[in-house]
Image 1 (cartoon, rainbow, N blue to C red):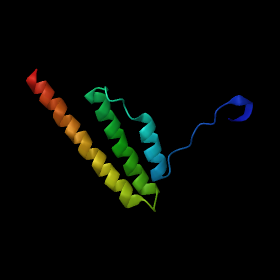
Image 2: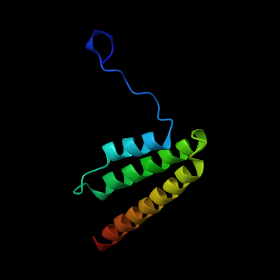
Image 3: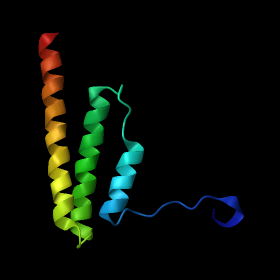
Image 4: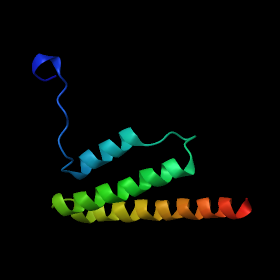
Length: 87
């Protein structure tokens, strides 16, 4: 806790491990809608791409994770389109 009982705000994420931890904390529940999952995966892509640029020791790994999450987002988009075409 900070001065006067205030909780210190976390700074910007700077490492791949911090990105993983943040994404685990913000991961939707299993019953979340496809739109929620899509937003999560899109955010994951953005976060991993940012980390790839600023964490020199884990840049390649962060790019792998960005690509993996991009693929998952694309799968969600396909599922959303399939659901809309059945309506």
